[in-house]
Structures are given as C-alpha cells and as structure tokens.
Length: 347
Image (cartoon, rainbow, N blue to C red):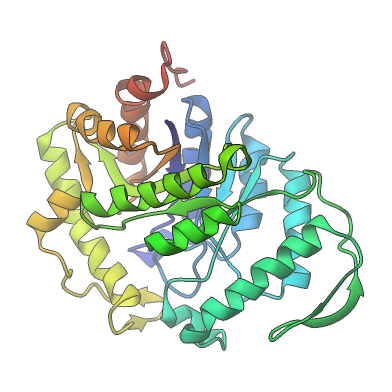
C-alpha cells in the first residue's frame, strides 16, 4: 500500500492570504517528496475557503517543478464546468511540463453552491460529466476528432501538441457509490474514492466493488488501481489528537454546509454550522490518533486491498504542526505497510 498526501488548501482565516496558503502547499509537497510518499493530490474548488485551488493543473505543474519523484494527482478536476476542447490542451501541456508525472483525476463536482454559480444545474452534472469524459478521452488519444452529442457538437479538430504520455495521460474517475465504482472499473478506469466521514463498513464496500469488478476483467484489469482518501492525522499524543478533533468538528461544520446543507457563504467564507455528526461520531469515523493507533487502523485498509491511501490532514492547524505530523507518519507508520527499511530524512 502506497501513501499520498492531500494538499487540501483550507483557509479558515482569509487574512492568512493566498500567497501563504499556496506556499504551505508547496512546502508540504517538498516534504512528501523527501519522505517517500508516492504522490500528492490537489483539489479543485472555487469561490469558497475549503479545498480552495481554482486551477489544479497550474498547481500540478508548479509542484512537479520543485519535486523529483512524486506523482502529482488532481483530486479532482471538475469537468462539467469546463469546455473539453480547451481543457484537453491544458491537460496535454500539464502532462508535458510535469514530465509525465501527472495523474488526471476527474469528477462531476460536489458542491451545488459553486457549480450552479458557473451556470450548470447540479442535477445535470452527471449527464454532462459522462459526455465530457468521452470527449476528453477522444481528444487526448486521437487526432481529427469530431463530435455530435447533447453538450458538444464540433467539426474535426486535433489537440496540439500531442500528450507526452501515450496514448494519453493516466486518468482516474472520482466516484463514491459502489455501483458507480464497479461500472467505472469495468470500463477500465482507475478509481479515486472516499467514504468522507462515513463508517468503516462503507470503505470496505467501496473497495470490494472495485476488486470484484477488476477481477471480472481478468488480465485486462490487472493494472487498475484504487485510491482511497480519508481525513487522517498522526498526532504525537492524545492531547494533540483531541485538539485536531476539535478542529475537525469546525471543518466539517463548513463542509456539511456546502455539501448537503444550505450553502451559506459570505464573502467567500463558508459559515461553520453545527456539524451533522457529534464529536463522538467524528472520533469514531475519522483517523486521528497516535502512530500506534493509526497502524492498527491502517491494517484494515491494507488487508482490504487499497492500492494507495490519501491522507487529508489539513484541518486548520499551523503549518509547522502539519509538517511535523507528515514526518511522524512517514517515519513511524508508512514503513509498516510498504516494506521500506527506512525513510528519507529531512534536509
């Protein structure tokens, strides 16, 4: 099982500023590269102060320029708000400028607040996403593509230049429900998923859906992988774990507001409403604890057959505290799951 660090770009205090926010993300990427993480993931959200990265491909190119080894994964680029004829060229450019380290995670979008302010109805995102994926694949993998569909109609065009990675950059589909995971796997897609703050049983059903669909493909599916994202924080002691859990409660009060709630946003800042789950429920459903606790919980993910585990650990704590947790996880947890004799030391 490999590990990936999520560059979650949470901005609870806007006065902290975008320059410091993005500088923190880049410092985390450097640390992930030094300490043996397999990659970093980059979100995309607009108009709000959670998961705020308006251009994940721009960030991917910057991250690749300051690192040497890690994969750079979008998690996820939102297709229904884009024109695939433009986006395909941007993906190709990012593939070239990252020297092929780009992994393109794509999805339909999660928050109606932002999607609908771009003129797309949330209930239409599934159909538009499905067609957009097919258009994007055609443009990246073929020349002289023409299209006649519900959302796209165009004469033959060729995206230039052609991608560095042939026949096209690696692509993952973000999907949460088990039937969708199975369907996308059978179509030959890698999978990104998450149970969010859901119970352990949910992640197991998500993994099983992928594994069963992958097995049905035989040798054609052997290369397919599934990445699982969870809120995970490696605390030095129980006191720090309790502090991070309190931060998580406020974070999810904002997340729930725009994910399933009323979408109350003022000047780009999401109002922290009461969290849907209690503190006790969050403690059960999030992975926040000391290294030994995380090793115990990680064993379940390892045994379930997750290929890559994405740690989402930015809950508003100071950057120095965040970096210490990243190092602690790399040194005390990661070696138990991918057979490393040790990890690279910070310089």
